[in-house]
Length: 158
Image 1 (tube, rainbow, N blue to C red):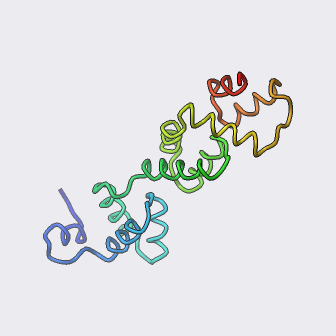
Image 2 (image 1 turned 135 degrees about the horizontal axis):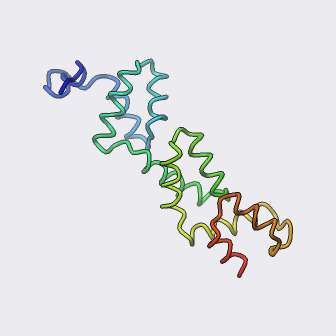
């Protein structure tokens, strides 16, 4: 296996970890991070792409950097504070730099039927009653916003 100088120094114990890894560890120790967010922070500190890739890969392999874990935690926090639709949550995660596949997986794991139903109630409350609850247009709009048919059925049957 080929290794670059930074990897060899860490593996052989010849030197302390490179500065990029130290800075990355400080950021991860302070708060949960995700790959592209951590990369951007390290880029702002002046590190090269190779150095950043090394740090991101090393922390990922060590289990200290996990985009799916970050997305789940972010969603859990956001759902408690806001009344966003699943669609808005997906766009927010993708806008942060989380891949669409990872964001969709996190949404499916985090937004159980009960959690989605509670979110829907808050979403409707926040956005006003609008048209009558049995109106097909309202149901279609909520479906477009990412609420599942099962959740909409439960909501409209209440």
